[in-house]
Amino acid sequence: MKTLQDLQKLRDEAKKRVSMREGDVRYRVLVGMATCGIAAGARPVLNALVEACAKEHYDCTVTQTGCIGMCTYEPIVEVLDQDGKKTTYIHVDAKKAVEILESHVKNGILLEAYSLQ
Amino acid sequence: MMQDFAMHLLDLAHNSISAKATTLLIKVHESPSNDRFEISLTDDGCGMDEETVKKARNPFYTSRTTRRVGLGIPLLEGTTKQCAGKFHLKSTPGKGTTIGSIVPYDCIDRPPLGDVGQCVAMILQASPTLHLTLDYAYESEKFRLDSDEIKATLGDVSIDEPEILLFIQSYVQEHIKALQHGGKSQ
Ligand SMILES: Nc1ncnc2c1ncn2[C@@H]1O[C@H](COP(=O)(O)OP(=O)(O)OP(=O)(O)O)[C@@H](O)[C@H]1O
Ligand SMILES: [Mg+2]
Image (cartoon, rainbow over all chains, first blue to last red):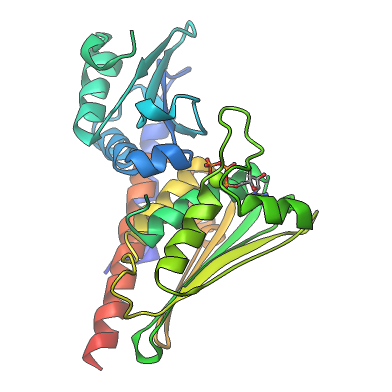
């Protein structure tokens, strides 16, 4: 079973990596986590994003937001780039979420099939 | 619909965060021997006056502007009623809010507890500065997670680093599972 001692080891590794980070992140990834989002399945989406970021260290932050105002399209993931350009991905699931990171965040290629036109 | 209680907890924690809470206590108590299952959240957010409390239990009330209905509180009340349990909501303006549900453990319509580890990690992801305490008990066996204790261990590493969140998630999961299994074999 994990203990808080294990956390110390993890902290030292995280510290090294954080200190290597430079400047601002390239993308901000937002997940709608109001009741509508959670009920529609935003929780596994957020979890998949956090898990993928722990593994791949994408150049982005993942943040939760409230109701985006389009409840019927939930779960919604928004990707903002440094110029403030926003892409809205709709009906996202855990698998699509990881694809969005791989394609959009890592390679800069928008996934039009999943985005709101 | 909410598939499990952890989903309600995550959702209601967002209400506390929106209410500018700095501390949040989540209690979960599973007691098969007393046929009792209990969850509650207590925050020190802005609170609600009596009128607002009344309104909040109505799905057609919300203080949000993006949508005309608020669902979080009525959904917990619905889940509670479905098991003939007790729903409670107490709030004091400027002091904070306590919301919770007590239902029979053996009610067949009771949703499972769900993944409390994931719920806790996501609350901390949503609000890394929150002082979050989880008090979990299975019968009389207790487990507590205190975000301040984690932060003290982390030093200047932020609690919302993805690896740290995943650690917290499985740390909570493992401890809860151990208590649930230990409890059953006794
Ligand atoms: N912990 C709290 N502290 C202060 N006010 C609260 C709290 N919880 C709920 N409220 C008030 O009650 C209203 C209704 O809450 P509820 O969770 O049912 O809906 P919502 O948060 O507005 O929308 P939704 O949950 O559907 O995204 C909120 O808009 C808020 O004004
Ligand atoms: Mg709510």
